[in-house]
Amino acid sequence: MADLSGKRALVTAASRGIGRGIALRLAAAGARVAVNYRENAGAAREVVDEIVRGGGEAFAVRADLGGGRTEVEGLFARVLEEFGGLDILVNNAGVQGMGPVAGVTEEFLDRAIDVNLKGTFFAFQQAARHLADGGRIISVSTAFTRSMAPGAGVYAATKGAVEQLTRTLSQELGGRGITVNAVLPGIVETDATAPLRERFAAIAETTALGRIGRPDDVAGIVAFLAGDEARWITGQSIAAAGGRV
Image: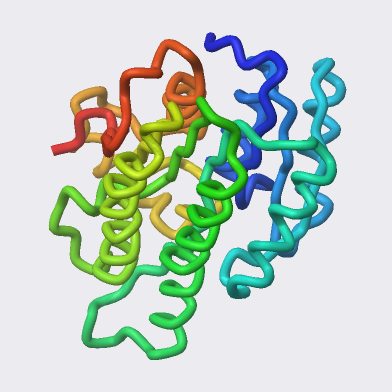
C-alpha cells in the first residue's frame, strides 16, 4: 500500500460507492481525508467514523459539485481552512444516468454537464491554484469512453471531456511536480448500478477476470496514483474494467 502519511486529500462524492472506497483506502494509507457529500450527511458521517475508528483523521463537508463555481470554491475554502493545504484531489462526483440519445431530456443533459464536466472543471481550477507542489489529481471517469455502449452517450461524452482536461492539465502542472491522471472503471457493484444487478452475471462473462468490479478494485488504483511510486505517471487514462471486452 502507498504511504500517504501526512498527505491531505479531498474526495468528492465520497459518502457511498466508489468514492467511499477511495476515501477509506486513502485514509488507511495515512492521508487525512475530506469526505465530500451532497445530500446524505448520515452516510458521510459513517465514512468519517470508520476512518476515525481505524486511527485516521477525516471530516465531512457538504457541497454540490453541480452547483456552479461558487459552490466548488466554497468546498475548497472549507478544506483548506481545515487542513491548511491540499495534496490530493480525487474527482469522483458524477451523474451516471443511462438512456438512448433520442430520449435524453434537456434537464438530464444540463445536470450531467453541470456535475460531470463543469463541476470537475472548477475543481481542476481550484486544484491548479491551491494544490501543493508534488500533489496528485485523480479523476474517476468511465470505461464507457473506450467502448460503444448503447445508452451511455451523455455519460461517456461528459467523462470523455474530463479525460481531455486531464491530459491538458498534466502538461500545465507538470513543472510543479503535480501529476494528473484518470481512472476508468467498468461496471462496479454500487447503489448506482443497482438497476443493472440482474444483468451482472452476463456482464461478468464479458470480462477477462469473470466478475463485476468492487469499489476497492478502483480505490487501490487511485491510492497507487496518489503515492510516490506513481510520480512518473501523468496525463494517463487507466482502464480498470477487469479486461472487459
